[in-house]
Image (cartoon, rainbow, N blue to C red; front, side, top):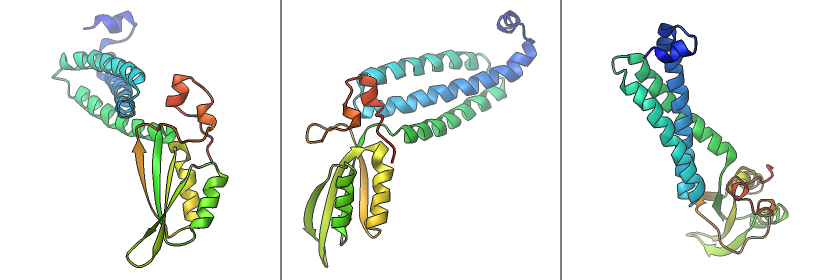
Length: 202
């Protein structure tokens, strides 16, 4: 057990009581971040990247888990393991939210001011389909938009600006086939650029 710290020129007690718990926590952070992205990629049908992320996720997990299981009497390892898992979950979700992988569908139900919102969507290259409908007490306009998740916050800002009373829902979608106008994200055939779109932030 002391061969590794000796090889690194470290005091064994310092290594196993301080440095190794930190290694466990950081490894779990990376492991859980990879797991978070793997799940998202599986949902989106990105087989190649999901497989790659899964390989490294399990490789890290096995490497760390083996060391922890051999030291079942050290409670600090359990704390490091739990902290790494919790931190990895939070960081993974935060990174994914910032990167905003994939596409989504935005459904907006508008009682009035629909023309202003539709004009803003068209002006900002947000694909839009409009359906006239009737509610319980008045006419409604339903706007459907399929857009990269990177543009979602910008689209929500347009809704709040032009139709603050509008009701809208958001749903992630696995893939889109046909019907979309070319945009910056479609100009490259790179697999990684399709998975991690570089759409301009508004």
